[in-house]
Amino acid sequence: MEYSVGQVAAFAGITVRTLHHYDEVGLLSPSTRSRAGHRRYSDADLTRLQQILFYRELGFSLDEVAAVLDDPVADPVAHLRRQHALLTERIERLREMAAAVERAMEAERVGIDLTPEERFEVFGDFDPDQYAEEAERRWGGTDAYRQSQRRVCGYGKDDWLRHRAEQADWGERLAALFDSGAPADSEAAMDLAEEHRRQITRWFYDCSYEIHTGLGEMYVADPRFTAYYEKIKPGVATYVRDAILANAVRHLDEPDRT
Amino acid sequence: MEYSVGQVAAFAGITVRTLHHYDEVGLLSPSTRSRAGHRRYSDADLTRLQQILFYRELGFSLDEVAAVLDDPVADPVAHLRRQHALLTERIERLREMAAAVERAMEAERVGIDLTPEERFEVFGDFDPDQYAEEAERRWGGTDAYRQSQRRVCGYGKDDWLRHRAEQADWGERLAALFDSGAPADSEAAMDLAEEHRRQITRWFYDCSYEIHTGLGEMYVADPRFTAYYEKIKPGVATYVRDAILANAVRHLDEPDRT
DNA sequence: GCTTGCACCTCACGCGACGTGAGGACGCAG
DNA sequence: CTGCGTCCTCACGTCGCGTGAGGTGCAAGC
Image 1 (cartoon, rainbow over the protein chains, first blue to last red):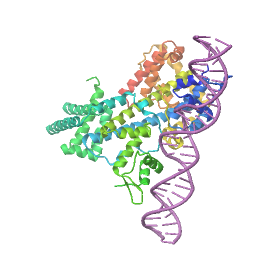
Image 2 (cartoon, chains in turn red, blue, brown, orange):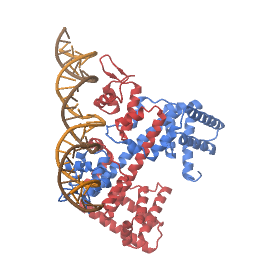
Image 3 (cartoon, rainbow over the protein chains, first blue to last red):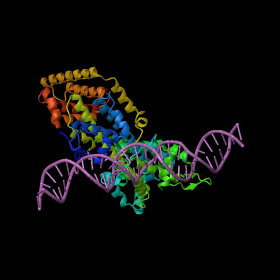
Image 4 (cartoon, chains in turn brown, green, orange, cyan):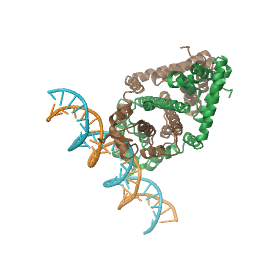
């Protein structure tokens, strides 16, 4: 089976011009041409194109793509393995960025200022990238983006005040429970932790149990967050951390309770 | 505290030229200049730069970055929320790509040819990207990439034959066990499933229990994989799937038994 | 038979986001 | 006062295409 430029372009989600360009630079020249001079792509060409697009998406320049694809010692399995390695690495980086955003959000939520140096931690050992694109096209139609947009639109100062009130109320109940001597893994403490988690989910983002325990650890690890909780009542920071952890474990044991 | 171009560039992991460029296009003009005309960046400027780099990394053009950052109705929390949404979305996409690579690897492993159309499924509803960079610099030094490189280098035809032999041996033992009437959640079946998983990990990539169950589902869902296993013995496809699942559950219950 | 339309072709210039010098100014160390 | 290091401002180069302009091959309708 052979395909024309238009078919391949539609199929691969790229433009005809891109295929022309890859032909120009010798990255992907169709194996045949019709007598009219039209490019005819074989299945093997399509396979190569798929590889090209994969590496390109992962940040390789066209020269580099040509280098890895024309590597004589690289069988298909080697490519797949490398691709898998690149993907997992990239996912890990994005997860770290997401975790940093979660921490920044939590700082914002309880009213702590981060220094500009800390803001850059999102990027880790940053090395410049280049991603250019019509983002409205790409992200504008996506669910998570829209959900974020919607949630944000309706928020005003009064909402923020409501949140602060909820937060303060929760803090008082937490302090009372702590004073009562109830252990951190008591039913009541876990319920407060769960309420804390849902408050974040309702007002900010979908806070999973995993993320939540991460926040808990931060409360005892980061002196500013520790200070925030210790101001409620000394000893509360670790108390909250333990309650969050106990609540997460409870959810693992009985995931169907709500 | 104020910073010079060089300091900011080193700090943020970008070049001085990039800062000049952002100043030229009005995306980030330093709030002050020294009497010698040198740019002086304030903490607020750094915060804005961090936002710029964040959105840029996620594929926004500089125009679009300017648009979202100069949006008058967007408070810091709105940005954080949007960033979190974008990140989770992108992570999801990469995970899907990784899953597609895992399936392709599995097809390669058992010797099934995918049609070119299927190869493109990696990209889902693909929309062209543009990531240009020195990948050797970026990926060349990373762990996962190096690991992949090392593993691949030593592989030759004899290794591949050894793998086929192991695979065949495993298939025979599987068929024998299936004939013996042992249920899929028996100790022996689960051990065979675990061996299967480790074989993938040893020869190809780190196959987690989650990925493994995904492969199991594929064996019954995809007719070509089903055919591959049914050729060993009719009924084996679902048998393998169930054994893999049972083995994964066993690992959840007693994760410390190696 | 002739036009119309579509998908293809080949130039060739344009653009975004910088890279890469060229040529010069400031400040301070020896 | 002479380097040196960092900063400045042009200004052209690069990469990966986008975007026409102008022409060709071919099936369908008039």
